[in-house]
Image 1 (cartoon, helix red, strand yellow):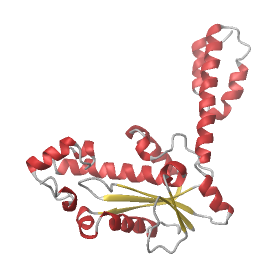
Image 2: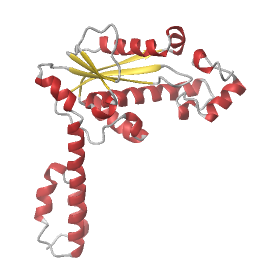
Image 3: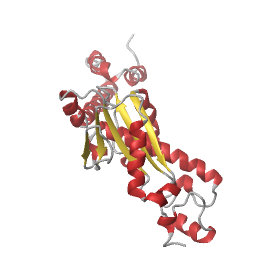
Image 4: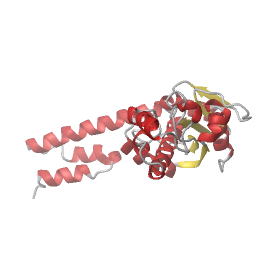
Length: 254
């Protein structure tokens, strides 16, 4: 007895992408219009999957160049939180397993919060080592945001459980680091390691700001993450600053 179209759909839906091509062939002789439509639908999904894998492979170019030169552990590093009026600057340094090709990975700013959360767990499961660097608003005010960012990056690199043999950074050259490094313009879009670092740093900082929102109410930190939205600036003028505001950033508003 032939399988129903609903049953075939369930089979195709639950078939791993690596096996989907062969499974589609098994149903290719079925003449029913509904089955033909299903095959077209899942063939398009498979094409989209292959295209995405090719896109992600292109994000491994810098890493592969370094592997070919004998560098074994490539660390990507990125920061989140240079621009907000409140909260820390957060960096992540991460060394990924070779051959890791997560679909959907990209610059964290290009992803929805749900997609970042989903990728966060997948990335950490495929990391050889990762570390977070955090510099407080107080220290940002003391040494300025650029130096605070560099310090957070150095802290993250130095705290890795596996010492990197090469560092790929988003757009910057990190001072006081002896490990060979390369700054890549728009690196969070071009390097899988930097993109992974940007996602881990972003999710980490967002979660911190959501916790701060419970302590310092009224600023909307759970939504604006400390950035200078209209709502945040209005609250700042009405309530005044709280302990996690950056004094050097808010002097034009109070």
